[in-house]
Amino acid sequence: MKVAISGASGKTGYRIAEEAIKKKFQTKLLVRNSSILPKSLENKERCNVSLFNPSKLDNALRDCDALIIATGARPSADLTGPCKIDARAVKQQVESCQRVGLKRIILVSSLCSGKLIHPLNLFGFILLFKRIGERALENSQLDWTVIRPGGLNEDEENIKDECVLYSSKNTQEEGSIPRRLVASSCIEALQTKESIGKIIEITSSPNNKRLTMQQSIEEF
Image 1 (cartoon, rainbow, N blue to C red):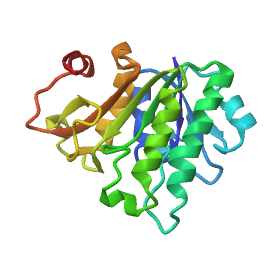
Image 2: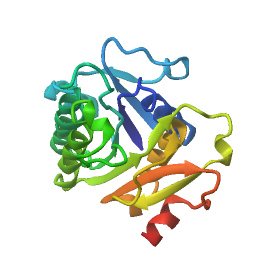
Image 3: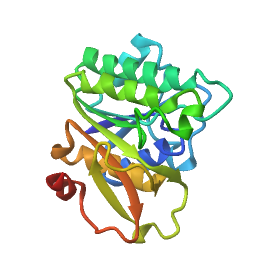
């Protein structure tokens, strides 16, 4: 399987690429011209694209079997970012997949997506626009999975002690998770057919029961 990863230069995106490579997937890293990749990915296939250029996006995805969307607006003074990146850009990527016949798509979204009253919405109603992006997937008739992580952190020191809590949509409202575990969860979703058509919320803690994604979905 060849996996395209959009936003592959980002803090979560590059980890997704690394985890895909560990599992022996071929990767194509979809990034902007100005993006800088970490050394671990410098020799991997890279494709400079604009998410708002349909023809270039189509060409980038045409030889791929799956797409993981790790693009996301960052909190900033530009309050239009969530609308452009979390809603419009996701819709553009979904439509590109439909045009080129790419069926499998995974979106990294956020816990509390769609919730109106939340501090994150101070940054351009980011959770509302993330929900719009999710809906573009839900209505696409593609084989989709949405991963909704809790608060993201960079800690990898004790990551082997962390157990991921997988749950169905709108069942978790707080908690955190290392970006590395978000990345491995995206790759696990690719390998778990039961994740298709599901919104999966994820946080982590050493106190959670250690279950696979598939085992957790069976309990949803």
